[in-house]
Amino acid sequence: MRMMIAALGCILMMVLCGACSKNRICDEPDENHGLILASVTDLCLPALGSKTYVIRDEASYQLLFPSAECAERIEIDFRTHSLLGFLVAGQGCSVKFRREVRIDKEAFQYIYKITSITCGKCKEESISYNWVIVPRLLPDWTVRFVAE
Image 1 (cartoon, rainbow, N blue to C red):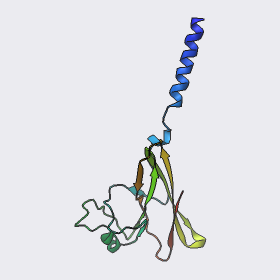
Image 2 (image 1 turned 90 degrees about the vertical axis):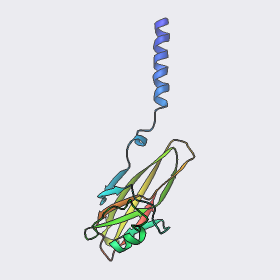
Image 3 (image 1 turned 45 degrees about the vertical axis):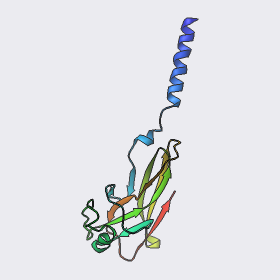
Image 4 (image 1 turned 180 degrees about the vertical axis):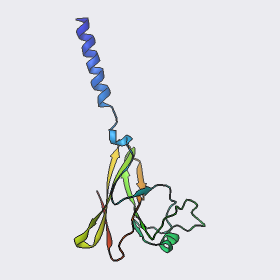
């Protein structure tokens, strides 16, 4: 009888401990897919208050991140790359982002899609500009931003 009670106690402890474990995705880094070459997390706040950004040249980059005010600017070769930003907010103890940039050839458009995954039941709001470097965008094409 004692053995049975001890075994049931062990099973109960395993079930309770497993029920309280964190969602595994909350411990993993944000994900990038499609045309994204790199994500950039250490840029300072942009000078312009927009929700979406398409930076195709150095002049636009300088305007958005003036070097006198932004010591954290990174070097981007705009002859071969473009910079996209998409301000997305989420509520939770932490928020993870799945970012994807893909091409819609029929619409002559790039699609930057972000899926936010909230972790925990905190009421804190987290925001991210979701800056990503992609291959240079074609000049006549547009970018459509989608948040899920």
